[in-house]
Image 1 (cartoon, rainbow, N blue to C red):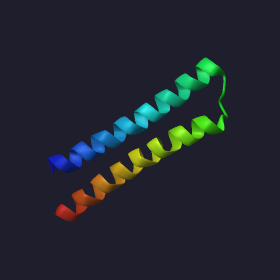
Image 2: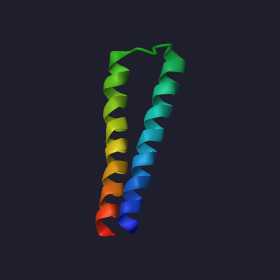
Image 3: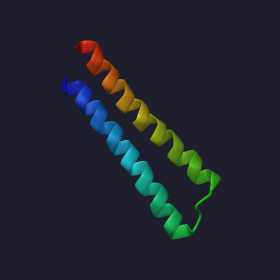
Image 4: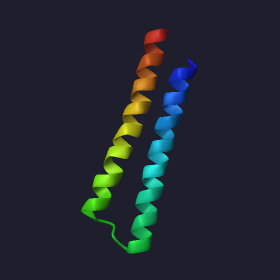
Length: 63
């Protein structure tokens, strides 16, 4: 159970970091639609979402 919770927390941290980085970079450089920014933030966001999904699926299997 703790392992699944740690993965879920890590997923939330990744999502939070991706959003903070995107907003911070966009505010600093006024580049809201920068392809380079998208290419950096998108994988971090996807890994965070997949981590949460994986943790919740494993939790259901263990019940």
